[in-house]
Length: 111
Length: 111
Image 1 (cartoon, helix red, strand yellow):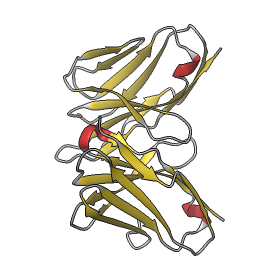
Image 2: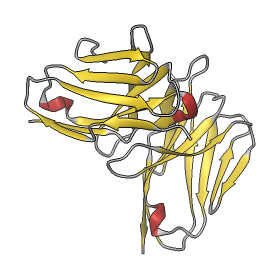
Image 3: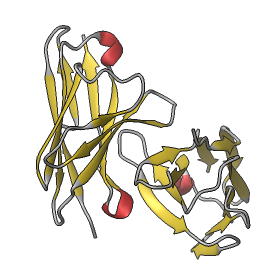
Image 4: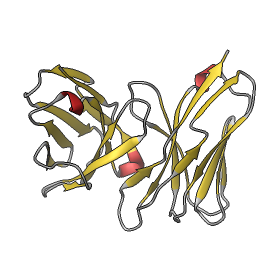
């Protein structure tokens, strides 16, 4: 079955620094990937749609300059949280449209 | 905007009991998915229902899609501690692959 690998599984960073999260499709090509954010005890909220070879589409209220998405190949999408602040601390999850397969998530803590 | 409301939000029952989780919307969905999410992990797809009135069984789990394709239910028979987790329904928006997630039901099965 389709497998999506997300890395790292957790990261702690200092306020003001940037963090990159990778999402890879291991056994299929993903022209479209999705990035979600999940706060504790809440559901998943879609942040953006990542399209291979073109600009990402961001949901309303998501700062595109803060959450940089790059989908340079058919198997890799990256989310970079720039100038991170404590309020950016959350669980970030990616998925590929094929089979609605999700990565294992990245727990980001900004201190 | 398509919204999916789940009920109950929290459910804690004894092992061996039966339960039903509901997923309701005022919008029509082409399909609905049900996921289970463990703490610190991404959601795992349990089932996809496509046809109005469809019933799918997965061992002790029974999924039903409403006739009007606006609602769905998940029934668990003889719940076991391994069923503990966050259950999420989700549906794709018409015309694209973006998923709207339900509000979630946090299920705890007490041994």
